[in-house]
Length: 209
Image (cartoon, rainbow, N blue to C red; front, side, top):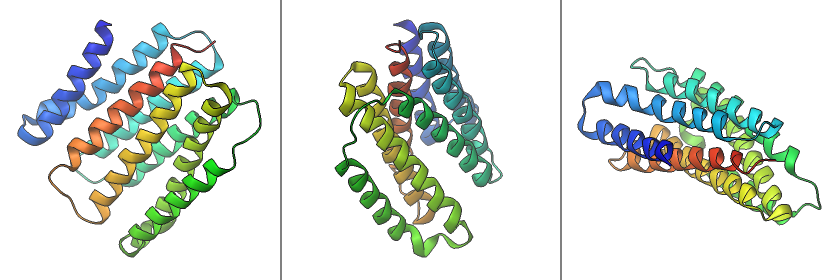
């Protein structure tokens, strides 16, 4: 319980520092939040392939966070790091799925992804292909988590699906903030949904068999 309290405090300190400073807290508490989640996954999760995939995804997320925080723009390395993280999460979710597919779910997620891509399209420029690929990968990650939840209806699957949906929300707001223009509440929306997403995905590990 104390470790989850530490996650909340670290995440809130990062968000507060993004608006009010000091800068050292901004740079410290974002990666620290994910590092604590990695420790929770390693110490609290069952020894299973699911745990290994999720912890690996968290590790690549940590690398992506560092790239995106650097004063000099490292958007592409950050994008690639999170792309790998989503692929690792996808492997974890799809490995748990065993049952008939719910085909309306990919249709819904696909339609939402296409709409987001079309809204961003005029502003993407040379990043059109990388961003399009990223949107496709995170959508199928959410699809895998959703199929897992609909087939199993377990707490593990519910945490995974909830985390995947929040990750889509966080990345969507991040994309609009970057390509359409920043707005004051963007950091709050992006980081609160991001930390909650990673927290829920990590919590799913605690129920892995």
